[in-house]
Image (cartoon, rainbow, N blue to C red):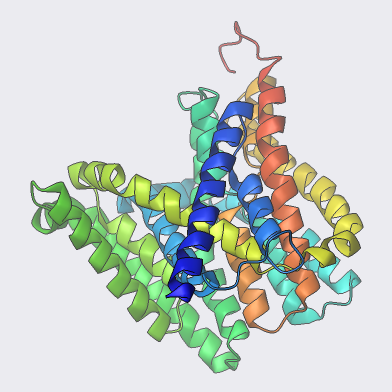
Length: 386
């Protein structure tokens, strides 16, 4: 009985802290992700009030948070849109991959983390945060700008690249040999291909069959299908997050609109739990030792992401203000970087790597929105190409 009381007290305290942090983030106009990470650090090892009884429950909630984040991201795209974006943005996507993976990989080698951990660190620095970027685009009123489709095409390419990268890193994390890693990638690519083709040709019909007029039934159906597919993906050594992303792609039209409506509160809750759990898993005492590498990585990868967005916008004839917006919009890192760092921990990486990744995401999720706001200040109202 006392354990149950302590469990509810701890969990209630964590949720109330999340509410306070979300309110603070809204008040100061920043993404709540860095504040959630700070909250997790406060409750984790070496923090102010370590959580003990409810940590296992929070860990399960964190897994659900990853699944829901990727499901909601998949709902933003249709199969045909993804294929079109992949074709038109392939070159930019490859430039983005090389320019932003290399700094993390090189930093890992320079810090003597070893080849495998350096690969994970390259993934941490590579991918922008779709969640933070989307929030920035909406908050600053950039959704209708000419550079926004270019930013989204980069994000789409990164998300699809994750369908290949995550199985590889997952295979490394769980000790598979090269054959197992190749099998995981093949399965992931086949799944992506099938979902894209089926979603492009039959997405509307499948969505109508799967969803009824009841929001309750629609929620239960989509959530159940997503969890089953995520479980199958894990059994096939493909990330559950990738499975959820593919389910989201397969839902389109009115069904996707309704799914976003009913799933958003759940996503917000469990996504917050996910970031808090990553903070819980990080030893606060490790952070001072990684401060210099984090600052160096933040400076280098902010510049490389900015250059990627600037160059991509310039290829479409967009002028200076639009290029600045495209560059700054891509700076923020977030959910995927934390997922990859979590895989590194599963692979036996040193706790210092988790501390470095947490601090890095904390800095980048804060710097990204601030840089975007600053880039918007000199906006040229009369420039027809901006």
